[in-house]
Image (cartoon, rainbow, N blue to C red; front, side, top):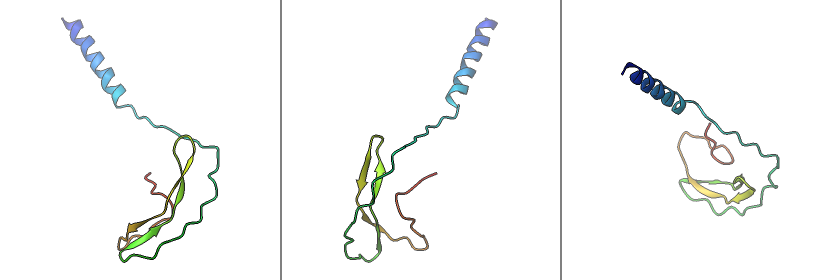
Length: 86
C-alpha cells in the first residue's frame, strides 16, 4: 500500500512540474516587408486619430492592414504601427 501512495505521489508531482514548465515560441522572418502603401487619409473626426496602415506577417506572407481611426486617449501617445504587447 505504501508503494502505491509513493508511486501515485511521484506521478502527480511529475504531472504538475510538466504542466508548469515555461514555454515560448520564437518566430523569425527572413523576408523584409514591401514598401508601405500610400493611403489617402480621410478628413479628421473629432475625438479620433488616424492609425496608418502597415504590413503584417500572417505566418506565410505579408498582408496589408488598412489604416483606420482609433479613439483618442487623453494623456496617451500613440506609437506608429501595430500594437505590440511584450
